[in-house]
Amino acid sequence: MDAIIALEDVRFAYRGVSQYVFCGLDLSIPDGAFAVILGPNGTGKTTLLHLILGYQRPQHGKIYLAGELQEQYTRREMSRLVGLVPQDEAVAFDFSVLEYTLLGRAPYIGPLDMPTDDDVRIAMEALEIAGVAHLCMRSIISLSGGERQLVAIARSLAQQPRILLLDEPTAHLDLSNRNRILCVLRTLNRQGTTVVMSTHDPVAAAAVADFVVLMRDGKVVEAGRPEDVFTAEKLSITYGVPVQVLRLEEQLIAFNPLS
Image (cartoon, rainbow, N blue to C red; front, side, top):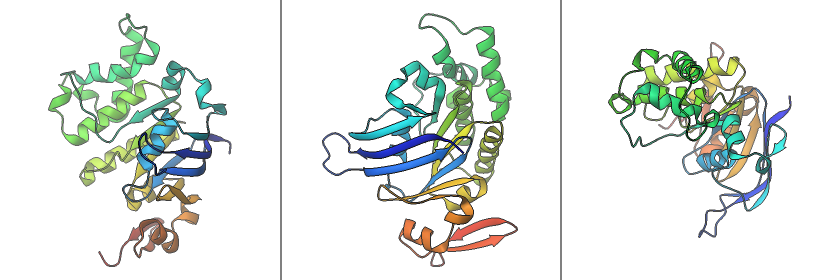
């Protein structure tokens, strides 16, 4: 399968910091995959997503998206190709849920133009997919954490991106909301969107991923199919603690026996 995202010999350090987050990073993510970037906190998962999106630029190396060098895309083209759901997002204005979701249509609307009926239809369809269309007239700031995360996913869906990046989308959520979000993402992936999700939770990763990237200290420990990557040895290296892996009714379960 062709890679929709490819990083070649990428080196990146934040301005004013001498230590590299990535030094010679190589990574390919297949087109149409549900890819999970898995690793402990502070290993560079968020930075990797920001590099893919173009928020940050590497000091060295190349990033390819859909077969083209990242820098060849205009900002509008990038916004149509890649969407991001951040872990936390401050909302400065008291938007309704529909108004907030319509922000995802910005790459298709002129700077002085108003959303068309078609834009509203696409936004409502995104809310339907996320299962929160009934909240369309509610204030965004009145929502629970799980509802707001689902609406953030809907806003990114309204962009109609070919690649959807999500930074720890299930962090701090209860089990019910975590499962709702993972189900939405699985459905979206089955409809053809490449999903790239970062997490530190191997259980969530095992539930949805068909491609896994294990990362530690800015390096790829292993990348590939879950059945090849989810081993006690590789997860123990990734997390720096003993990890055991069990298979229960075709579901992989990873846990620290000392926890």
